Image 1 (cartoon, helix red, strand yellow):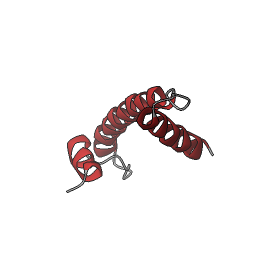
Image 2 (cartoon, rainbow, N blue to C red):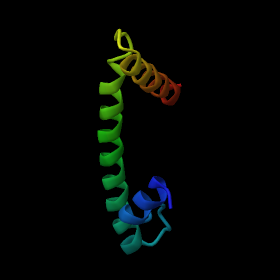
Image 3 (tube, rainbow, N blue to C red):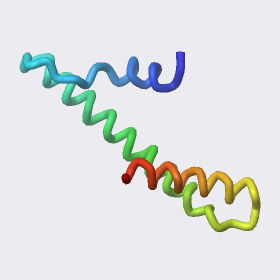
Length: 74
């Protein structure tokens, strides 16, 4: 089981089905998921600030994080 599958099981379904009670629960799941993603993106953005560091490992991580952020912004 990978991280995506684990998070999906923890959060629960997010896709609305057109039934109010179920969709209300799924909307709460969606809000929880977007809150998690916001936090993760913030973490990745902090790592991206290392893109110009002299230390190879920090620069490599920063460049990877910046590339990811630029890709999802496209």
